[in-house]
Structure formats: structure tokens, C-alpha cells
Length: 181
Length: 291
Image (cartoon, rainbow over all chains, first blue to last red):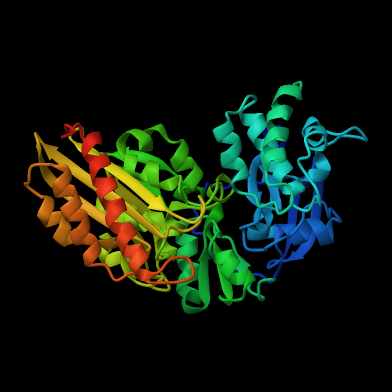
């Protein structure tokens, strides 16, 4: 009787092991969530998140402008926060939730932010737009009615060579009004 | 613009990180927020063989008060410092300066320790640490040691950190009620590195300057303390004239670089103007009367 109740293997005493760190790797398997979908891939550790999104996942909406953190075109949301995907390695996003411009509109209809950008001439060539949309998305989630200063502060992290910015500012202001949540 | 090949490890504890640095030290670089290191990798200005990514060491990200110090873990994101009511209230100079670091998207990743260990000559945080005489806690093979800013910053992009060392904490003195501080800078655009930045800290004794600290960024190989100007201020009745004189004295001793953004003379002139502004604002904030 008592034999049946005994655990198959005796419980091990909790030993505090001094873990030996894993030796540095050239390739790793990375698991993360991208636009709500679980993703698992083997990647070279030097691959940036931006290149991972574009080349491994085919999500080419995330654009690469300067590749050193200045222009903001590659901005994505990492666990909800806007970050430069050119300054982060894909392996560093393991376990994280990443959102890109592809995840913005659920179907054919534009997200209110996208609609506002079209309405207010918030884009011309469109190269910088995906990054700006992701930064604006994070701002409007945190501040449904942002001040102009908050809008300018978040847009300060983006370069646009076409619009002169005024249309972008107008679009973010407008989206704050039209986005029903 | 792709980084050269390297191998990568993401330790979970300071002990593991130190073991890796001990093993690969001279060939390894510590990856914190990556907002300076990854551009250097992308442009292949840095070619480390091993990256030791400390971003999984959650125990290095904290802001907590211990006695008369605010202890900030090296991995604390700049954005977390900006959002901290404790920092804003008790180390207002740090709070004011950190908002000049890049943009929100950069500060979401950039860390306090990373900015200090990188020691860019035009970065804001080294000047803040110098003006506050904050303690820098370094873990290494021989255990922990505490360095002053003067000991820590040793030159252009260079610190006292050895290959097997890790900066783990910064201890900022809490600002008391009779002290005022100010950080001002001029950059080509907000978020760019400063052409000149100034951190001023004044302790008030009635209508005289009790203690003065003045530190510049962007005008030398690292943060530059203006000790002569500090001596000139200490014990003197606070007047606009005194502040202007101290600012001129400080600027005259600088040997700033000239580049396409600003000539050396422009930087020196700017340093005098900004130092005077910083001193006047710090004095007002200390509760001092405006004369």
C-alpha cells in the first residue's frame, strides 16, 4: 500500500547549484511571438531583429534606413515599447512579444492610425511610415489624448524626408480623436 | 551594415557574467542596451569575438534607496529612470539630464550603466555622475570595488573597467532641501549628442554658496569638472556677477574639440553661457533669492 503511494523517484533535495554559464554560441534557436503568432527559428546570433523580421519571417513592412538607430524606420514594439529593431539581435527578443506594422490592421480595413495618416498627408514615399506608426501606436495606447509635446517627443525619434512632419503631427492628433477603443 | 560574426552568451546572473568575462575577457564585449555598441558593430568599428549580453540579468535593473543614496542598477533602462518619481524628487539632476539622452525609443533600451561604461565624450550621464560625485560599483574577479567618477573615467571612450569587470551599480547622493541642481545643453537637434552640456549643483547657506559642483560634457575626452570655478564660488555671496565670473573662469580653462558641428571657440563661448545659466537655475532651485 505505502509502496503504491511512494513517488516513482524520491524528491531531490533542492540543491543550489552554481550554474556554469552556457558557452557562447554562433547560432541559436529563438522562440518569440510576432503579431500574435508564435514563431520558432534557428538564427545566426548576429542577425538583427530587423533582418530576422524581413528575411526569416518575410515581414518586409519594417524598413531599414540608417541601421544605426538614428532614423527610426525600423521601429517595432518589443513587449509594447517602441524600440529600434536594427539595434537588437533576434536572439535578444527570445520570449518577447514583437509587433510590427503588419499587425496593425486586422483585415483589409485600415487601422485608425493608418487612416489618419492617409487623410492628413502623413506620408509621401512611405519609407519612414511603418516605424512612425508603431511609435504612434505605443503613444496612443499609453496616452489616449496626448499633448502636442508628447506627440513631438515620440516623433522626434523619427526622420522623414518628404512630409516636413506637419502632416504626421496632424495625423497623430487626428487618430487620437478617431480611434474608438 | 551587418555586424561581423561573433558568438553570443546571455548569462542569467552577475556570477555567470563574470565567469564568462573571466574566460573571454579581452575578446569579449558586454552588451547592455546596445544603443551605442550595436551601431559600432553594424559599422564594423568594433569586432568583438564574444558578446556577453547582460539583458537577462534581471537583478541588475532596479532603483532603490539605501540610506542617503539612491542605488541604480547598471541595467536600469533610461526610460525607467525618467519614469521614477524617486529619481525626480531625490536626484533631480539625473532626471533632468536623462531626458536629453536620445529619444524615447532609444531610452527604452539604453541603460544607465551602458551609457557610463561606453563613456562617450559628449554623453550626458558621465557629467551628471561627475557633478554629483556618485559612486560607481564595479564587480570583478577580486570582488566588488567602488570607484569615484574621477577614478572611473580615464579618457576618450575609456574607463577603469578591466576586461573581466562589470559595472553593476551607481550610487547617487540624495539631494537635500538646501541644494539646487540644473542640467542644460545645446545640441544640433534634441536627442543628438551635446555640443556642450553643463551640470551644476549648488548647496545654499543663506545667501552664500556653500558648496558648488560644475561639470561639462562635450568639451573634452570625458566629463570635465571645473574645480577652479567651484573654488571661486564656494563661500561667496550668490550674485549674477559671481555666476558669470565663475562660468567665464570655467570656460576659459576648457580645451574643447572643434568639428563640423561647432568650432572649438564656439564650444568655449557656449560653455560660458550654459554654465552661467546652469548656475543661476541651480541657485534658484536651491531656494536662493534672485538678486
